[in-house]
Amino acid sequence: MLGIVRLHNVPVPKRLTSLLALLLLALVSGCGGDDSGSSDDASESPTATGPSVNVPAGVSLTDPGASLDLGQPASVVYDAGQKRVSVITVTVRKIVTGSMKRDFKNFVLGPKELKSTPYYVTATVHNDGPGKLGQAKVPLYGNDSTNTYFSASPIVGDLGVCPGGNLPESFGPKATKQTCQVFLVGKGVTLDAVELRPYEGFEPIRWPVPAPEEKPKQKPKA
Image 1 (tube, helix red, strand yellow):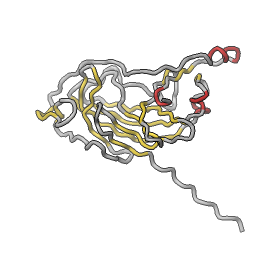
Image 2: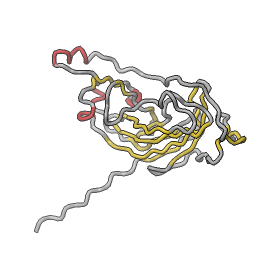
Image 3: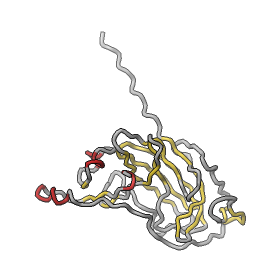
Image 4: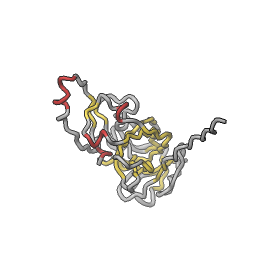
């Protein structure tokens, strides 16, 4: 899947172009991090479904399958693996269409990737507690016009417009991080929605991609 290729950013002197074209694009898996912790703010009521965790007081979990507008938050129980479970609130704020030719000009890509379209998703992740989520993957996925969901593309190198990456090494309760995730879709395919999938079997919460605004038609000159 284009959504899970690893992209390499390297200098591209002309004499090395043919050698650099041999670099491989690799699949990745989520990274490890801190063990889960505890918080004094937690209520005593575990969630009815999904991973067992005490939901912090004042936090209301968002219904699975909800469809939200950009800027609307969703609170869920996130199972990041390795006994790391916590409640997080995720807000997808912006979805921007990028350009492979412009934004990835210093990256070594295969023919399929060069024909793809990048989407940059800006989101805020807040750890409500009680667990620690250091270096956990941001559980956002793309869903395209073929109804296929896929993870974000990890960026190896410097993509200033949207750096990607996991949560910080230290990401305990009450920590907040603004992140930008890169989603690639193939030629002839569009990104339909960004989905929050915090654990296996969870019905994803969706932020549909807004339809592009139509430009007003110019009146013909008299």
